Image (cartoon, rainbow, N blue to C red):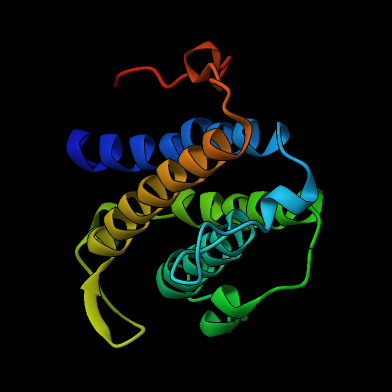
Length: 168
């Protein structure tokens, strides 16, 4: 694989599992389960909904779309869910999905990056799919951090994360 393709995959995998996920885990760890399901208004999602949505998005785009593996997703339910699923269970699901995605990404080749996939109603390259997931995950990670800070009024001290990403 070329240096660029390898660097892209390595950085994408590292961001998902070693940067974004630990930040989400830190943000969730300071909250009670009721806080996970709090929403500032009816037009906004709770952290619980965002965690379900991230799991569904990664499963659809990487596990199913890139990896051609079976997955289950009810996208609308990710946003409609109001059952107070525990933070522990939500994080377990997210981590399991990310681990499946990481395994899929470990097998992506140079040729795969420019191959095309049909994901949702989009015709995209594998590179596009991975880039979409990383960008999407980053955006919702920021929302989860903001909601956690809004609920607690505390600094999460994310710069103290032991698994801080290292530059490539």
